[in-house]
Length: 259
Length: 279
Image (cartoon, rainbow over all chains, first blue to last red; front, side, top):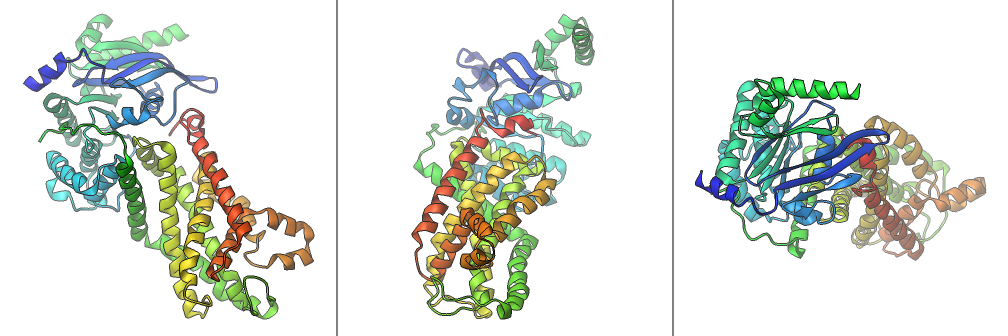
């Protein structure tokens, strides 16, 4: 815990993630409208929004799949569009869709990720062993991914995202399609990464029960940021009694504005 | 051990590039070994042509002495380079179009989130596909050898290798350009109809160009403009231990153009990926 405090105190440095006035449109449809927020190092931040809120677009922009039409994204001060190499080296990603090769073993999947990060097989193998063990899957290292359950595969994906020791990890609806136990496990594992290892996390979800009072919540609705604060502060500002109530109050308000 | 235990973050140096390329090729080969059906169908396709089509045609179609051949050759010998190029054409289209699959789109995103430059990642991905296509070609050549189709000297099996690498790269790059234009995999049938078949038939794969010229000068012009013709001829000459400068120049030029187009298509700020919404 002391380590977390120390890292929290060092927040005077660049933000783990800084999204600065990002706008994007597909043709006439605005997907992101002047979106700004930042995530400090060693913070658990939740990007909350319904389907179609613009989360996927934002994710694509942060992971450099394509550039936003306006604005900038910085990862530890590195502009994703201009210094993509340096920015992406600090970033680990767990995509919403399953991206492990089902026919390859857990270890082979990890080694592939190592190669993509320029880490040779020997070093990657040692790191993969440690990380997979931390995810509670030490005995599954040689198993094919096909033989794993959905929750286990997700944990492997988290281990994989950590292989190159990034300081920022993005998870796009990582609990989608998992049962209650697997959801809780993955959430707990990820929170531990923030607390014990000082990793900054941006966790995308539409499930309010994954949010704790102290988490930073960025509420995205119809491409705009409606709230960006600690969960308790968002609840208080909305005059609600829970984050779920705050969420529906804020989003329905935005709906009226539009109408 | 801490997850965030970090060695000093070094820039992506030459060693890292090599590790990256090696890893991409290694993964593609592993995946290929696990997909037996893909291997079998890649092998059956040209063999059907060889055992049925060529066997039927060898009586009706004599091939006169044209370079690189110094004697009369059987029709099965003549179409072997065309079938080799067909293996590479299918492989190039398939491995690139597989990116269109949603699931593949996921692994494509895994690839593109690597800190290595995008042109390097795309080229590595292409080279991996080429490596797989070369495995398929040599498997075909083993069976062709048993069918008594062999180059004049054993060197042919070696001299064909650089030709295969270059033609595979050209066809893979073409597939990559197409993959950025196509929205859904159902369109593979469209690619078959509008790309694979015309490229294959309007080329020197099945009949020498002088024969086509006799039948239809118009078609001969189309064949002469088709880059696939030059891939076939490059392979044909190389298999016979010879070098054909014009084919080499055309295939090299097309490779560069297609590759550049693919890099533009996957460019984050200009790309087609944006229009698609990134899945």
